[in-house]
Image (cartoon, rainbow, N blue to C red; front, side):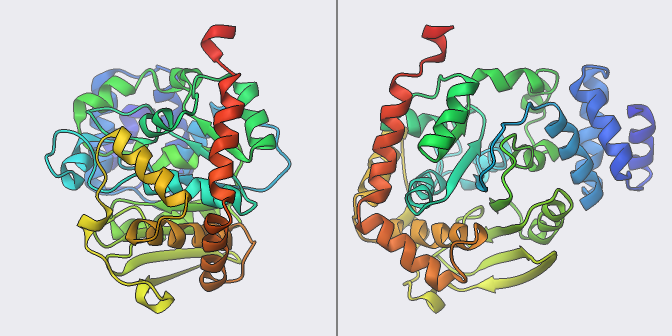
Length: 357
């Protein structure tokens, strides 16, 4: 199938959802050669991925994951995989060698959202190319990520937070990981990683690396059964809702997608320079997160509050962003966000996957 798919894409034609799903299943199943995969991903990137193509690829990847048996509505806050490739790091890093320009906004946001009564699940990869990702920062915060699948499910149910970073998920990508690393550019895998969430989250706040992707990814989420979602591209911050300037937002709600510009000043926030959101090493970023959820004011807190507000709206807890902002601020000031971090540390401390298996 992949030869026919490459020929079709090279001619400038789009694949159907079914054609993409079959091709991606062949890739993930090791039925293709590295040169075929590289040609396929490059041709697709040059042509530009369609809604049907992204949906088909995401469905193929999701079919490889064993779903969690969870009855509660969850929200998926996922960004790291979209901004994981070296190409993206070079665009957002001060040095181009290691680290990212901003601190780990979404990691801080998770504790606020969970403290506000929403179950949160994040699926991500271990960092590459020196990228300071959520896994590094969470470990510096004291969270044990080496836990079993059953413990991840219990953590979601009991603490309200689940991180799917464990090595048990790596085998699914074993036929493409090295190819992606050698290519060094974003591919469709950066888009489908956050969509193939085994916890079945019905609400999403998803950041993308290009403003042209917000509406496209919102439509993909709709096809995959999402109830509500914010897909965002922020000025300077890219895959977060920004306080540095406007954010391009595509809001999926009631089976429709509305796209607009979100200005943080309309919600009472002062605009900040990107430098005010800079992080550093994993240790630096973990310190910043601790300070934010412990109540320290400033631009870093503001960007977390704004992103958490969107999560509360997407999850159905609040009607609009203004109400979501009030809830987020109260969660931080009451200490409930910090309590969630402490609960996560305590729960995972007794759940070592490698020592028990």
